[in-house]
Length: 436
Image 1 (tube, rainbow, N blue to C red):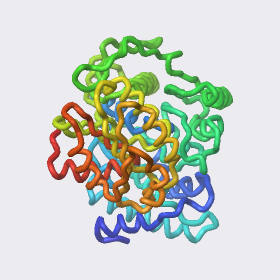
Image 2 (cartoon, rainbow, N blue to C red):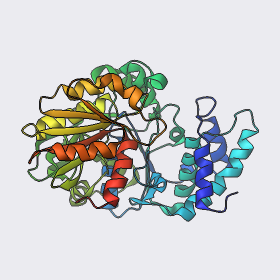
Image 3 (cartoon, helix red, strand yellow):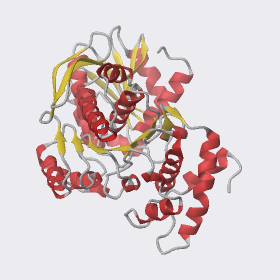
Image 4 (cartoon, rainbow, N blue to C red):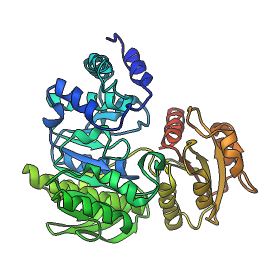
């Protein structure tokens, strides 16, 4: 048992290895011992390659505007570990992390002695989350999948609605080499008779999801088929505006404070999910509350402007599909400006493809860098991509200063790549007083 928050966190992070076998048996074992807290709270379960965090935030914000206390489970964290388990957007207290770790620790020790073997770090954190939410601290939970879906620790939950935001090529070593294979893993969150909402998903992946939904007798609500966006345009300030329609409602002049067409798609999936959740839980929807929630929703590190002069933007485009959406946003919003990009990635990502995509833009000056994380791509991994016109900085702080010196008036500095990188940069820059 642990006496301090730091001891509890050290223990959690020391369990680095994923569970010995994929599957939910360890989760089921621990939750049974705790009286199945996962069954005590209505939930929305969110999977997808990209867009999970933003979609969770849109859902949370709309439900909060209806007076609900909403728990969220997300990863990775941006500033503090406790963010992963939050209530109405506020991370739970250090004392609660300590208490929950002490609830799960003896179970983990006992589980280690069984044929199932001890839990993974993510299984421990997921069990802590279910334990906390199941104690009655929240009216609803919005739970983000950690990786994949079918074998993810969160997939013990029986939600009111399942959401699959996007399907793209990422984590191929674990999820599969093709979009249909990855889609099968993500669609593993679909449960019998539980409705499922899908975002903007490629046709070959959509076929797999449709098949699994049919097998589960789950009604499928697809983007631009069962719910539709129209009148989309970028606001002159910062954000997006669009209209939404499904068979139950129509919302006009929806405004988002987040930038990018992909955020419009995420918001649309979130509206559909909240509508279905309301039907299943007898929540009376208020259109004004929906609009307020969507406008208020904020997710750090997603096209987040942290300085106006010069313009500095953080965006966690950490895989190939994320970079594609980033490029779409640059083409739409910054095509007339010089864009300086400072990019860092993890070793296991498709760095060459991401670099090639970024370099396809005529108005971009690319610089590569690294950051303080054991899985970060360092100089030896980044060196093959340093070509004519591409700089490499061993330390991102050096890269930041150099890029700021080389920027012209009206230029934009876009810091992007791994979410762990964005987290480190954001923590440093906002704590040293960049303009908000």
